[in-house]
Every structure is written in C-alpha cells, then in structure tokens.
Length: 99
Image 1: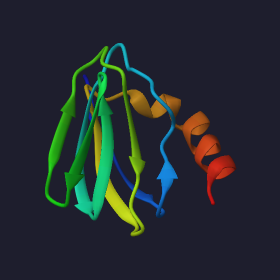
Image 2: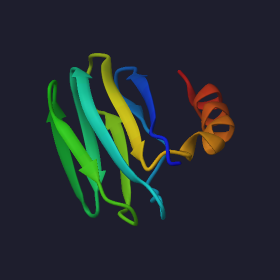
Image 3: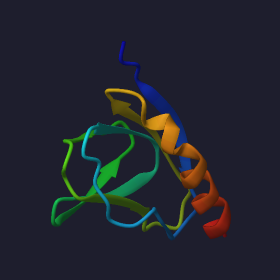
C-alpha cells in the first residue's frame, strides 16, 4: 500500500533550497502557507504567493528558494509516499545550511 508523505518547511529570508534536483518516482506538491516562495520548475523560476499550489511531476528538475526579506512557509508532499526514507540526509543538509 502506498502512503503519502507530507511536511512543512519554513524558509528564512533570502535563503536557498536544496539545489536543483528531480525525483524519479514521486510527484512533488507545494502549497505556499505564508509569504512568496520562488520555485524552479524545469528551466523557469515561478514566484508563488500565499495560497498557491504547485505540482511538480516526477522527473522534472526543480528547486525552491526564498528571495524575499520575509520568512516564507510551504506545505510539501510527495505522491506516492515512501519518500520519508530519504529524510535523514535531507534533515542533515538543512541543519548544515541553516543560517
């Protein structure tokens, strides 16, 4: 049985995401909770304001960043689930790159 994985991310002002990457087996969905978050989808950056949903299909290069002077927040989930097995390395990256 497949499960969805869901979590919140808060980005400090003028901070980068994990860098451009793709997921071979998962679509990734973001919902902007607060502020404006910039998303790289393919080769195009999109500024998404509070209330915006963005779906990134599997095998699509993507990234996200906070290019504003305000904290931003996103709700993020993967379809299908199972992505949580990668979370320890992602948590480590955020701890090492937190400002």
